[in-house]
Length: 184
Image (cartoon, rainbow, N blue to C red; front, side):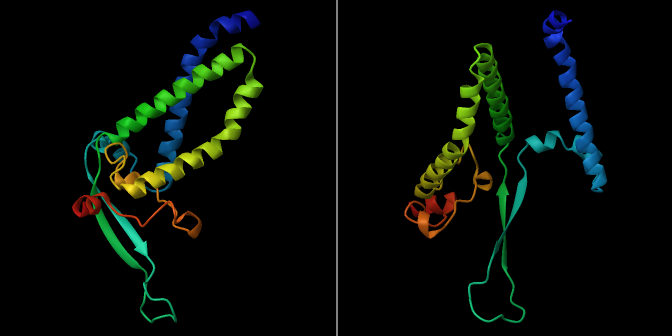
């Protein structure tokens, strides 16, 4: 029986992966329905989600004055209108597929030569420090040039860089790419 399972494993996983995908899709649609949203719009607006459309970004800033509470004072709200990029979804999908495939190949290789302990524990231990180092260096590059990676990762998807005293030497004030281009 063990030999038969080894020979039919890949064939059976074709059907298991399809079953998992359908179960995940059904759970997603059920969650949308439970929240009271229209389930049909998930399928009817699928192609339009890959096209360029307008995104409203709401920026909420605290009042400039500090001191006693001012009656009627509230947080400042600014709505920024951005155009989405049609290729960001495709790039993200391609990157996810490529990363999953590379992880699968390396995981399979590590299991075949029996180095799972070192090959899995070492990368997992390094994942957080390496990711934080990359994020800090990308924030530094983005603060020098607000147009850094604008063609790959648009402004509305770039993460917010922290603005604390400990990192003030590396990150300046946030400037939008359009402001940077008009200044230089």
